[in-house]
Length: 219
Length: 256
Image: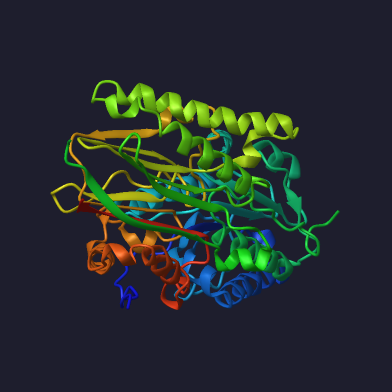
């Protein structure tokens, strides 16, 4: 009579989930006051709610929010469950250059923390939303974005809201900036959360095909 | 006649649950065999790139090419100064085989991307090779050791492949001048269960349990080891923690 081998109750290593870091870089200048900032706030809430419905994305995506101006870290990197969308007010100028520099620096620090703790991560995303023209010097920001994209350190997505200087955004970014259709922030954030869900479950060698930005980008 | 330390072994590659949804075939492959002629024991595991259209074919080509090349009677003569060059040549040959197929089918070698984990065990030494992620864990007398951290590249979803142009020079290759008592290999589908990433060490309790179980088996029941591994990989406990293809190889020494 032969004995069957059965591997009994095995213990497994308890490693932290891979992280999918996202920075939301959000314009809170005076021109965003009223309906725009209200819609943006609702959009960010929808973003969190949508991510929370996907158990894998909820464990992996980490969000940080930086607003400008003035440049302010509204919330440090936080997992979806503990991410509380900040209620943003609009009444400053548009120091876009400084905001981008801070975002890039924040990512550098975060990656070092991941590495120190043996946590693997996906390529971070920086999402910039602005409705204006930078009021500060953005040459350094431009260099950082180009360098970061060419080294694949992060992916930088600029979104213009009505009134945004798309030429300047084009010069700062490597990817073409998209113009938000009206104030369809909610639609944009639903698209973003869907894209992040795909990234956060991708495995090596997989190109992540992002859905077309229909429904929120103006043509 | 020399004393030949034989190995009992089992191996299995199983389709990941995510692939059941996408309809992809299993893109992992594995083989273990003992060559009577050369007295080598050879273990190989492969993980084809998720979206590479023909990576399962890349895996098959790499597997048969590698198995043949590692059966060469030159391998028994390798030493700590010659093994690296020889293994790099083998890697180049495997890559060429895949490239020939790509050319023949008019596609890019990238469509056949696959990782490689290999161990060749002789009477006096063993060699380990790694290109990509997953891992090799061995016990050569000092407890469970991890040969190399999974080669991830910067991000969780990037890795190296044998089909990369510089794979031969970037491969990790190690020569150990004694035989291992135990050796395990696994692809990235279960690497987060098998490795403590913070310490970058094998998760010993898991390996201790697996090896204890197979070492209580008699020769007559050796064939059931692969079946047990297959059951293990498709068990609820494992599939709750991964939806990727998974491979596990276990070898344990026996005097013969």
